[in-house]
Length: 348
View 1 (cartoon, rainbow, N blue to C red):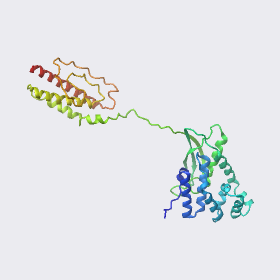
View 2: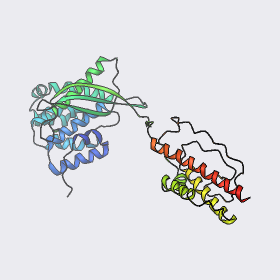
View 3: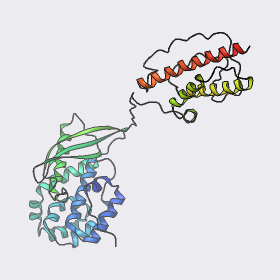
């Protein structure tokens, strides 16, 4: 047997027509509680008057007949009966009056206030909302049974003209129907809607909007991530070890191997600093991470290049410590190139 789940406020004002009708029928079959089900149906009528879309009760006509023609009469059925008169034939409706009120006089006396609400429900339900890229919602303030104020938001509502006091007043009257329903309670069991205070209709844009903050660093590409060394400090340590080596002239083969390793290390360092201005491109350097050929460095003394400007663009996404470390790495790289150039001249 399906577990019994009481139908809540979000379900009544959020679930689509077909699924909502199935849930209400199932709930009545499981409980036979005509009092609660009638108030569920009233809230759906209110939703149909205020919201865009089809929220009619045409799928629940048989259930309405069953409740008002067979269930035990009570005050809730008498209070809300007039809302459902349109679902009965004239003969059937006379039977309902006889069961609940005994005569026409008692019927009109008991439903005088409800008849006014019913006229507004029918009028606002027949109003068709024009197609628009915008949506509206009603944000209302109610008092609960303990006197505390709370906000209730009804989404996807029909537009309420700003220059029409009549439309605004009609919606205010319809919201008062919520104060006649006892099915909505707080977790503590306090009746949720006892007095309608204020409401306002808000415009809701349906366009997609995403805000990108200036503090977000750019995401590195997969090629850059794979080309980066483990840490910048490791690259610097590799350069320091080579600078501290004895100044013995290397053999031709070892010099080429050493040059390739140094250039590969320098190339990795450049890839790990995409934000910095690259140094002057040497004839012996290759922009690729893994150069296939290496030429001998020039004999002429390299000209010292000025330090890159510390502009906001270059500093974007880096700390002062990282910038200083990158500068030191470039200085050590240039010293290494001068030593290597000196060794090549000495060898010749």
